[in-house]
Structures are given as structure tokens and as C-alpha cells.
Image (tube, one colour):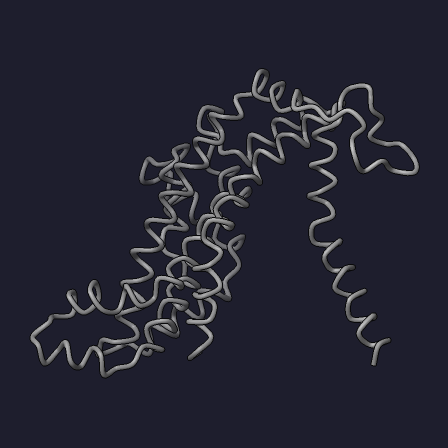
Length: 272
């Protein structure tokens, strides 16, 4: 029994190291000064003389804060549009009765099976025909309302007791009042899950911004980091510092919303 417990902990530690090891290594590299060898053997994980100068050098040479601001605007727009759109669509699919509702659910399910790379060309042609190419609006639109987020919200609304809304119907509440005053406040956790997923997917997206953006002033942070790598090809410390700048907002958002996130995962798992 003790051997099985030890093996279980060893597996957990191995998975933990595989999951966060690369991030910790990047963090360690970003804090090392010019005099430290980042390729030493055996590897030195802890910097002997920690410094934040690498972060300042990145900001001095590359407009990383402008790239980060563009990414923040794109991610914030995606969060707002997904939370509102997915919540309304999920409530309609779960609580409202209309012809074609089953087909609509099937369409959202099938949309999950289509790889994004398969529709990139048609998306680009559509944005160009709308004169939106090389704009941040074109980066936002394809991910404005994700099919996965709609299905998550549908499951969350389906898990709510029907009796609560039936009482509201007797009191004369219409569909919008039931949605905003009863259903939506009861699924805050799922809304937090949608917000986190939307922020992560839009912040980390690389391929679509790379295709639709051509002006460096409109680059998002992921595209800017690619540019950073070419500029500082001989100094991995600065590349690591740029990577930490890109990851930090994701960590802060998850830490601030983790309580709602785990509650939302439970809401979606009650009735799938």
C-alpha cells in the first residue's frame, strides 16, 4: 500500500515538473545577468546574481508594451463578446422552445469538429472583402462567440431547477427578465470559465493574427514576440523576459478568477 502511495506521488511530481518546468526555466533565464552562463553543465537553475534588467532592455528596444496593449484590447473584446453572446445563445438553446433548436445544438457540436486552419483562407477573404484586413477588428471577429462557450453555457443553464423560472413566469416575468435576473446570476462560475477560456485563446492566438495583420503597429504580443526572437537571436535572456511578460497576464487572470473557475467547472459537470 505504501509503495503504491509513493508511486502515485512520484507520478504527480513528474507531471508537475513537465507542466511547469519549461515556464520556471524561462523565468530563471530571464533573471540571469550577462555574466552568467545559461548553457552551463550541470544546469544552474537558480540565478547567482538575479536582475530585472532584461525586462527593461526588452521594453527599450522593442515596443513590447504597444504589442501587449493590442493583445489586451483584442482579448478584452473577445471576453465581453463571448460572455454576452455565449450566455444569450446558451440560455436560448437550454430554456426556450423554438423550431430548429435541436439542429442549432447539432450545428454548434459540428463546429467543434472543424479545425480552424481549414477555414483560414475563407476567413481572410471575408475580412478583405469587408475592408477589415490588417485591423484589430479582424482579429476579434472569428473568435467573437465560440461554439464551445455556447455549449458550456447551455449545460450550465440546463442544470438550473426549472421550478425557479416557472415561478417567475407566473409572476409575469418575460424571457429577458428571467435571463438577466434569475438565470445569469446563478451561473457566474460558468461565465468565469468562458471569460478565462476566451482570454487565453485570444491572448495566445498566433496563426490568425500572423495572417491578417501586416502593419507592425497592429501586431499583437504573440506576433511581436516572434519579431523579438529575430531581433535578439543571440541573447536568450531577453527572449525569456519577453515570454514572461506575455504569460504574466494569463497567470494574474487565472489567480483572480480561480474560485469562480472551479465553481463553473462543477456547474457544467452537473448535467452534460
